[in-house]
Amino acid sequence: MKKIVIIGNGISGITAARHIRKLSDHQITIISAETDHFFSRTALMYIYMGHMKYENTKPYEDWFWKKNRIDLLRAYVEKVDFNSKSLQLANGDTVPYDDLILATGSKSNKFGWPGQDLKGVQGLYNFQDLESMEEHTQGVDRAVVVGGGLIGVEMVEMLMSRNIKVTFLVREPSFWNIVLPPEESDLINRHILEHHVDLRLSTELKEILADDDGRARAVITNEGEEIKCQFVGLTVGVSPNVDFLRDSELELDRGILVNEYLETNIPNVYALGDCAQFRQPFPNRRPIEQVWYTGRMMGEAVSRTVCDIKTAYKPGIWFNSAKFFDIEYQTYGHVWSQLKENEDQFYWEHDSGKKCIKFVFDKNDRTLLGINTFGIRLRHEVFNRWLSEKRDVNFVLENLREANFDPEFFKRHEEEIVESYNAQHPENQVILKKGGLLSRIFA
Ligand SMILES: Cc1cc2nc3c(=O)[nH]c(=O)nc-3n(C[C@H](O)[C@H](O)[C@H](O)COP(=O)(O)OP(=O)(O)OC[C@H]3O[C@@H](n4cnc5c(N)ncnc54)[C@H](O)[C@@H]3O)c2cc1C
Image 1 (tube, rainbow, N blue to C red):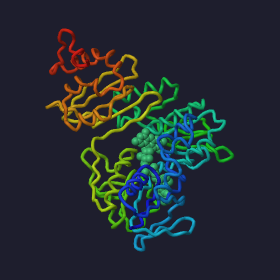
Image 2: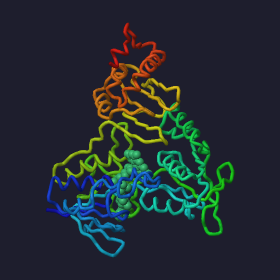
Image 3: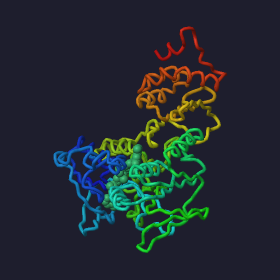
Image 4: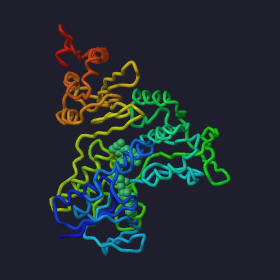
């Protein structure tokens, strides 16, 4: 039996611990400075908006850990001594280990703006950020959120749920256009504006001004405009939370460098989740993946390896989802912000401007490469399968109903979708037969 210590009680560390317990009797200790228990980080916004209580965001009851012989330690690890295999805690204690699993997550980026450390200026990543946001938005009338990504739009929604007027500074000329193709990005621009957000595209933060109490009172943009506010959200991305590991033998780049087995350069030391960076990224994947379900998959893989069933992390088909106010977004496979040389696309948007589908496929053999949907929910397992089976776009279109959560939607819009496909792709028509191809396709 060995002593396994995990730093981080997020989805990656917790999944690793649960699976190690299923596979072995090893001694397991999880250390985290953030909260006593694992909670769903993705639900932080709902706590602020009053839809959920913190207690409801914990996927396991508090007794679960003791029952499964997983020790929880609330502490901050200041340093790791890889030679003596021990951790130094901020409270002065040391903790020895045989195997160490680093699952330390991310931290919010700050880019050295004047005023970035004032009261009422913060990011949104951890539970302490939520508490700080609660404290610093009391009585606030105007806020500025800087950075047009998924966490930025969540923060805007959170503030607006408390009737705080928000100016949203987005550096790019269109919302999240480093990820979203032009049509989808434009749909979200319009949606944000319809929610009465003061969206400023192509606008950057230059400086944050303080009042006499050292609290934010305004921001200055790169255009020289002063925007009054009492709260500033900095949501300009996250990076691996690894500063306490610098200046050690552990090899780091932006994150902790790992191979496909999530092994670092030091024997018996592993890294996973948001803090890990693959030395050899998987095809079409980023070296650091900061999403919930990949952290869970890595947790399962590493648990097997530390229990002597050496198992590589296999990322599978890329998937992500998010919400832009009330519009749900899902993406499967690869839909890049710009089509690649070998790619073609089909885009359909409903008249309401609130629903759309985009298929990206290979120009030559029409194999589906990726799909984006907004305002339409699709079945994960179906798209996962079709992408793995390398189905062509016509097959997918003909069977779309199988992938859809809301058959009524397709009953209402099937004709329009296929007409639109035919208009965009006269070279590869879906032919309507008597009685309706669509009644055949979607029956
Ligand atoms: C507001 C928000 C919304 C999100 N929404 C989505 C979403 O909808 N879908 C999605 O896929 N992903 C989403 N994400 C991203 C997702 O939450 C992360 O990818 C995931 O939580 C990372 O898990 P992890 O286990 O790697 O790290 P974390 O959950 O960050 O856990 C790491 C833990 O380690 C602790 N720690 C770090 N260093 C030390 C130390 N030295 N000593 C002690 N403890 C330490 C930290 O305090 C933290 O508790 C969202 C993130 C945020 C912030």
